[in-house]
Image (tube, rainbow, N blue to C red; front, side, top):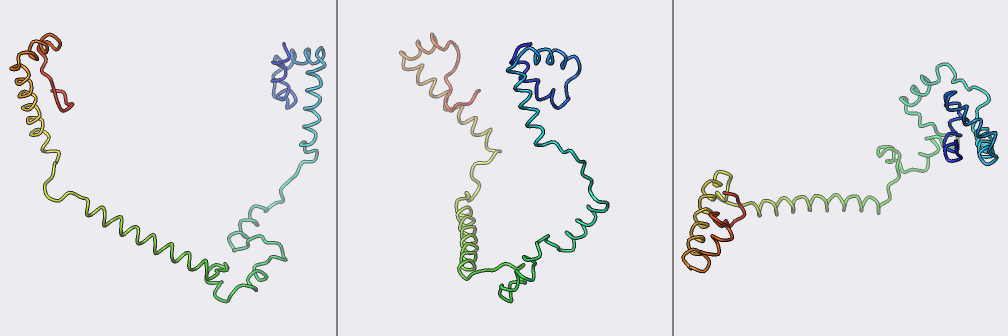
Length: 187
């Protein structure tokens, strides 16, 4: 075993997660290598900081008490920050707003933001309504007719090229019997 392999296995060894087949060669290496032994010693010292010597037991009924207090509205505040102490310095209508203080500036900003959002929504809907095509327009049913028109235009262009003489020979040499297509669609 080399130091690289040992360094990877040391944390698992300290947590007692290695099988005996894995731990035996590591122990031999730790006895022979002072660097890896120091690494294992440092890991042991570090784990002592996080080791819990005494088991801790949760009191019976703890979860039920926490749930009961949470559902009753208890916010778990310390006695000096009880809701009565907090609400004493709030305006009278603060209880209706959930106990939060609202300054006039905040109220204005919230109202202005709401109005701006509503105006932008109405404006977006108006622009969308104005840009929709009116009338029949191009629909999916027109695809066959459009394809036939494109094929007719392709045939006319091919005939015009063939009748010019110069292009006719070049088309047959370069393209063979293939017709040129315009419009990007396969025929």
